[in-house]
Length: 488
Image (cartoon, rainbow, N blue to C red; front, side, top):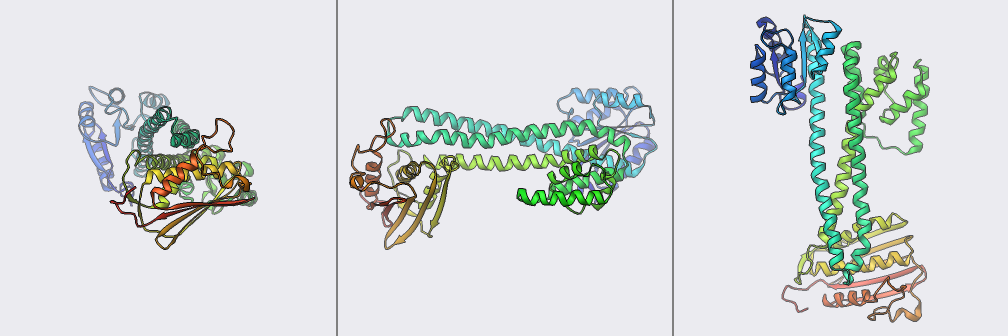
C-alpha cells in the first residue's frame, strides 16, 4: 500500500526537470506508486503550476537553462501562496556546498542522480508526512486562536454581568463562582499553551536534525525511527506511577542484557513514550552510536501527537465549562415554563463548582431516571446554586456532598446532603426567615433560603431540612405535573 492510500487521498507532486528522460522516469515512478504528478520542463512552467494547482510537494532540478533550481526555489519561498510547499532538490551535483546552498534557499531535502527508486519514494513519503503534520498543527493553532477569542469574550461577559447585577441574590452566588470559573477555564488554556510551545519545539528540533540524519542513516534505519514514533503514538496504556516505575526497571534490565549502553537513560525515554516491551525490532536504533539522538528524534515525532491529544482534551474541558455557563443563564429573565431535565440543571451547577470541589469535596450522585418536567429552569438553577454553595461552606470545603434524585408519586425529590457540622437545633426553625443569617457581615444577606423557598413554592412544591452533626439534608419536592397554563 502506498503513502497516498494510507491517507485516503492522493498527494499532488510537481516534478521539474529540463531533461525529458529524467522527467519521464520520475513521473513514472511516482505515478505507479499512487501519486498525482504534474510535470514541468523549466522554471517558468514550475512557478505557474505551483500558483494555479494544489501542490503538496515539489521535486526540483538544479541545473536548468534560463532559471536554475535555486532561483525557482527562492521565488517560490517569496510568494505567500507557495512558500509552504516543501521542495526536494534533484541534481547530479553532490558537492557539500551545493547541498548547503539548496537548504539555504529553502529546500527540505536533496536527491542525487542517478536515482535510487527506494530512496526517492522514502524521501517523498517522509516529507509528505512532515508536511501533513505541519498542516494539522496550523489548523489546530487556528482553531485554538478562535477558541481563545470565544473564551476571552465569555470572561468579559461574566465580568460585565457581575458588575451590573451585583446586588441581586443570584449574582451574589454567581459572583462567588466567577473566580472558580475563570480558574477552570485558565487551566485548560494553560495546558493548551504549554502543548503548543512543546509542539513548536519538537518541530524546530525535527527540522534541524532531519537533514543530517538523511545524510548519515540508511532508509531502513529511518523507517525504524518512524515505526518507533508510530508505536508511541498508538500506545493507549494508562499506568499508575508505581506500575510505570516497575516497568521501567524491567526495561532497563532488558536493555542491559541486550548490551545497550546507557540503558537507564534510554529506558527513561522509552518509558516516557509509553513503550515498555517489544523493543527487539528497534535494536539497530537503540545500539546505534548516536542512539540517544535518534531516540530523541522519535520522541519529538511522537510528541506532536501527545501535544495534539492534550490540546483536544483541554479544549473539550473548556467547551464543557462554557456550555454549562451558557446553560446556567439560558432562561434568564424569561418567566415561562420549559420542559427540561431536572438532573441536567443540577449537573450544570456542579460543573461550575468544580474548582471548589478540588479543595477536598467528594461529590456522590445518585440519580433515578426521571422524565423531563415543566419548570422554571433558571430559577431552579438558583435553588441548586444556593443549596450546593451553602453545603460547601458548611463543610469548610472538605467533606462529602451527596445528591439524590428520586420520584415519589407525582413529585420529583432532590436531596442535597453535606457532612458538615450541622445546623444548631435552636436556629433550625428560622433558617428560611428573610434576612436571617449566621454568616459574618458582608458574606450573606439572609435572603438566599427565603428566595429558595419561594421558588420551590412557585413550582407547587416544598422544601424541608433535617440536620444532625455530620449530616444535613435539604429535601426539595417539585410537582411533576405543572402545565404551561399553570398559575405561578
